[in-house]
Image (cartoon, rainbow, N blue to C red; front, side, top):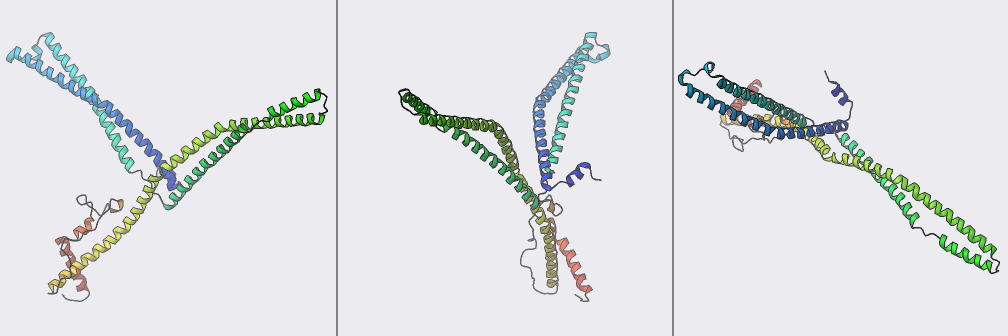
Length: 354
């Protein structure tokens, strides 16, 4: 019966399964590094405990030897003096304590090793199959993430440009104010410049309103920039996370393709081996009838390369992992003899006597 996790995974696309497994893989790698650190920390403790235990055992043995020499043939721990028995008991207590401490540390080290090995096996089995659809979905996600980064960057650039433009725009207030002062001076001297005064006053008010608008633009654009920068950082991190998955996704996709081709390769190889076996059998029968051989090579010249794929697990031998064992076996005398017998029977079944 499928577990809940298996049921959950069956409802996900290959890409989502991959992303889940990638997160799990990162957690496994982190735990493996933690275990290595714990092992490195524990190792000196074990070495010291072993040395201390060996030293105490040597002292205990030397003390017993000294007691045996002292008491000669009448040595019996029950007959020893109280302080001698206490000394022996103290050695035994220390040795027992050191032994227990060492066993505990070694058990902890063994447990860490077993956990690490189990995690490494899980890591090697954590591949997720990537189909063409999954790769295309991934590429769309990358494109969307990249577009999000670009859009935020454009907005930030526009906001920054507005602020720079508002800050760099020249102010006419000083010139207009100076002109108004000159007009007021001329009026004081008796000239009638009322219209000029009204116009310059209106120009000054317009320029003040323009300055207020610029300051508002700078303020509003400036307030949005920190938030936009944070959103840009998040968008960039999301894009980087996706881009970092590219190699692994393509490896899984290409691996899946290779496994599928490997299955086809294995079937084609089996057909080739069968045809090879029949041809060598017919060659042997031709020679038996006094005909010329049809063989063009040596007797043991047939080999089909193997690949390191799951599709080849049943077709290879640990002794010769680079070749299909079934092809190599087809070259043996035993297999050839059996093949000749089968070929003779096939021809005999047709009613032809050889």
